[in-house]
Length: 259
Length: 284
Picture (cartoon, rainbow over the protein chains, first blue to last red):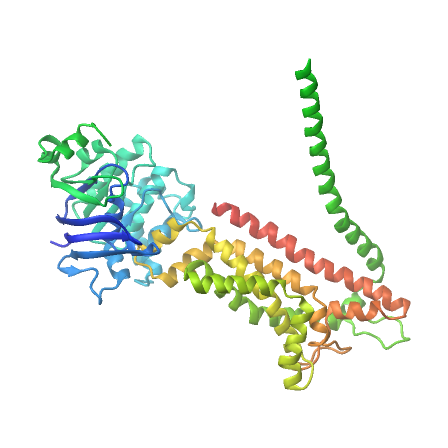
């Protein structure tokens, strides 16, 4: 099944500072995997290593392996653009393209990455993606309105639709609900539940309840001491992590004793 | 009691400061208003269809106009745009998007120095570079001089406008598998387009009035422009020549020319601010 991703001994750096160290994880296809942990433990950095977004920060680099369906995404003959097309991303703050209409936002990847010019195919994809992101009914009569005219929650679902339109295998979500109200959060979580039929989802979240609600697997990341790199402390089925974690740190974090 | 006195004193100083600032702001506006009023007053009487469309008449004959100078100015601005805008916009793009620390620092410094070089020096430079080597004055030489003058402004404005585009949009685009260059062109430059256009218009308005660099590059002419390799008339140079002449009707025509030039500059700067400024606000 397409869409699994494995890292071995993955470390990431900002200049000389090591942000994460030695992360080994096997993320299964068609499941939702949550990454939790206190602020600054490197969850987002780890996530951004999975589709080569990390290296866009000046001075940032990573070592170790990230294997996506058998291919090392950091191999010399791997094109970062290809990787990002197959492993999409939804960001913390909704970031629709301000000058584009709702429809153009959704089809931006298709059009600008030169994947197709076929108008019928584009409008079909726009509709399908918006439906999958559970936004179609709310916007179908105003597809030519600017994306920025939507509410925050709608904008985030627009960004999800935009990521879906290029047909990735995997969708990385970096705290997608942290800027949203509870009702919008609920809608996004419902959407994720639908999406996992077709996609692998990796979500970074600050919200433990959210991790517990939506995910099948959970990884707990932690920085042991300030200045130390973040490590993956424990990883397993969500039910186990939340009820009987192996590690004391995990239990402390889950039960709200710190973080 | 002391506290009341103290408060009165404090309020007085505060009010006085406000008054002085407001007064200075008004004083700063007075030259512009006076210039506009004076140019309109003096120039409007000599302004006519004939002035805008006809060639200058020989000394002693009345009538005639600065049609050739208007066309010549537009031609020079055109040449300068063709040469200067692509390089300026791309240089600004380089500075903002390809953050190569050392080269960017150097380019930025040189651009700032270039924008401080007196325009007559640029004229002398182009005179040696083009006029002397080709052997005669030309519109091309004038256009090159103006292009050099607009380069730093265009590059730095482009850079600043591109920097105002939030990184989150670049990331959104790259994360869709859109290439770097496509992201820059279709997302970043497009988003900053209004601001870049405003900067370009202001740069054009700036060079439209340049006189010194044209004196020994485009020179001037009393006929219609015939080609970019020939000397060409321009409004500022024509105004200069007419203003220092001893003839009263030439003086009147110089005023009319000034009015046309001021209107061109006003339309460029005010128009672009109104039009593109509104577009830019909708982005943020």
